[in-house]
Image (cartoon, rainbow, N blue to C red):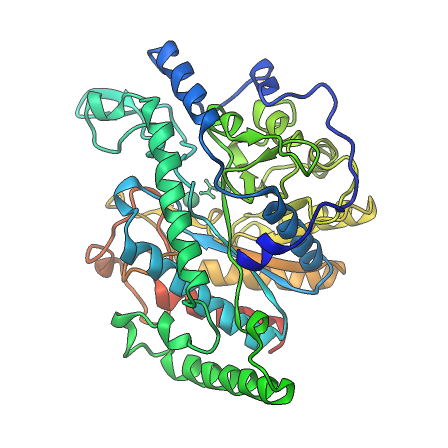
Length: 461
Ligand code: PEP
Ligand code: MN
């Protein structure tokens, strides 16, 4: 983030301010997936308090990311977006945050080396606390309670007290996001992400991983290149040796997003300053809904999930609403069709968007269309399906003459066993060993690195 922070971005493409829009105009539309707070006055107090708290990111960083995403759409870099399905307050600690950063850094190293392109790193962290759910309530043993909507709303334990939406959690989510962001910034500024020292990113438990040999060879080759460039230049290449990191979360809980929407002195318009890159989830992407209404008015670059069943015309009209000026870098379409449906669903969208000349960045989320529930009730994803969707995505883009410029993954630096398959061929019996997610199953370190290697093989390393 340090380089981005220094960039002077006040002269970006002028865009008209969204008409008839205010940070609160979403309230005039139907807002799905929102909790019901029993105490409306307490919610108002929390929102008012949040509005006065300092932001987590700056408008310069937000606009710098927009430029990079515009570059990714043109094939000049590649987007790597990843992190937990949902962060939890109790996971806001040093080892979990640094391990997640390590995995993302290692994956990006593999991508930089193999694709010979810069990588834009965007974490699903420092604010990924709200979850869309398939049902508003959950029933166990004849007892029905509100569903768990993420730590920004309520707690996962199955008790009436834990499941009661609590407005104070908005403040706590903001504080935990700030702590996470502060630690990530400090690590990066302090040299943790320095390409001269990739050994800082090693995870203790993976020494004997089957992928270590291939990864080590890449690290050595990158080290040689950095040293070669420095010998040529005669000085240490500080900007060359450093990496940037950006943050993202699903813009789901609109009372929160509204309270962190700000105007700043040196850039016109409104920015969501709790994150660089908000995205609209599949369940909240209704064209006339509150989430599209909120997002159309902010200047951040943003993601839009596109799942099976969406009609190309519906997608085009949503693009018009969110990006009426066809601004480079503004919109990233994150497709999540599932391995079984992608061949039938994706080409129509690629062709329609291309035919209308929309300048979007295409990104593949091979996770969310490939969820399944085993006979014992455990939610999992098969590595082979994740890999297959990604493989198909590259091939379909190539056939349609469009470009897949990024990937969106749910992953962790912990040694979890949540997704089946991968380098160690995890089986259903393995899942019981280290299944920690309270929401969607994540790729572990080895499975994540394998995906990065697959992308390189696919895109031509
Ligand atoms: C998610 O990204 O965690 C998610 C819920 O995705 P989707 O909206 O694509 O289902
Ligand atoms: Mn998820």
